Image 1: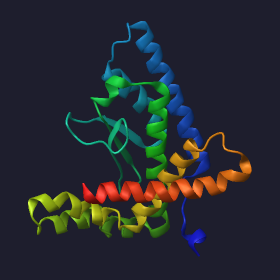
Image 2: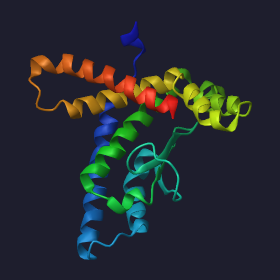
Image 3: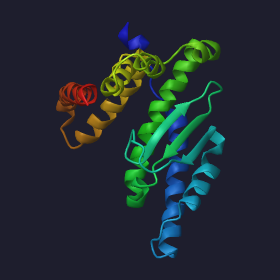
Image 4: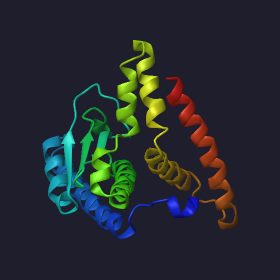
Amino acid sequence: MLHQAVLLPEPETMTSVQDQMQHACTLYQTYLDRHQDIDDFDVLLDVLNELSAAHDMVFWMGSEGVSTIAWYIQNAMVHNDGHIDITLDPIQLTYWGPKSFMTSVMQTLEHENIHLKQRDKMGAQKFKTLPSGYQIGLQKAEHVEEHQKHRTVMRSYFRDPHELMAHGHDVCREAQQASSGIPAECETLATIVVVCIRISVVLRKRLTS
């Protein structure tokens, strides 16, 4: 029953996206090599958006001082029409590296692809009208003290089954990366242990912050 309910990123889509993002990173690194390693985020955005247009994604540059959801990313969102927006962080991008950027972007896009599959499964109209855990949290936060607002939003956000599914995949992906080199017969058990620890630590930190 649980297995049937789990939605995973579409393999063919993610392979295609990964190829495009890898190409974008190569092009931007070539630009940096030719310009004394001086960043130009307009160039980065142009490269990313030219190569991601086929997948109905748009990259944006965010404002300084906004919290990130992943190393280089402030926000990502699936819209009702299936379009995905990804907002990059201008401060973190000053530490740009092709490998870390790929890891951050692909994990985020896998997360959003799960939300896209949730949308397809429930239907675009229901997806449009069903409030997310984050939206419900914002509504609840209007009725609590200032120091409780962030915790109220996060509690609601992480109680949303759609977010739990997507974040569960994020944690499993991190566990797979952390367990590289573990013998095959131990890998499943190691992944389960790491996932359980990671979930408890992450949720405790986020719910008490």
